[in-house]
Amino acid sequence: MSTHPPAAPIDFRVDIGHVHLKVADLDRALDFYCGVLGFTLMQRMGAQAAFVSAGGYHHHIGLNTWESLGGAPPPPNCTGLFHVAIRYPDRKTLADALQRLQRAGITLDGAADHGVSEALYLRDPDQNGVELYHDRPRDQWPKTHSGELNMYTRKLDLDTLLAEISI
Image (cartoon, rainbow, N blue to C red; front, top):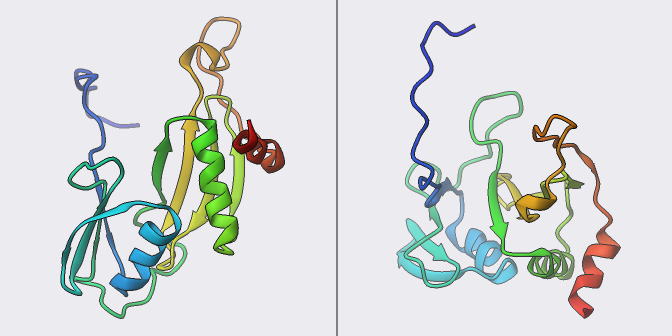
């Protein structure tokens, strides 16, 4: 049990602006994040760093080789990033992401319905965990009888997700 008193809640407007990932090969990482997922390259700093975005933001993901050029992924059972979660605006755009992954021959580690969201789990070329997901509207989030959030993990039906593309 922590001996630190709880802090006052953080301002509700705070969010995660971007993530920087250490990669071994910048071109290989760009092939994945831009070539497969569809992010736009905003700026490149030679073979050392690149900044990619959705929608023209300065960057959502920074990719760099500053400490990792030619390096190996971290071993299992060590601390570090579990995954970066990329939120899609709706189910149809998540279905598009799944189709892009399938076309590129990228295997999923898993796919889950969490009640509040639907998610695809995979690894990038440097073995960083990546979650692609969309949130359901808040009024559809599962609740207990007393009104508390009641998330769960169930298998996500990928065929039903892909059917969103033809709708």
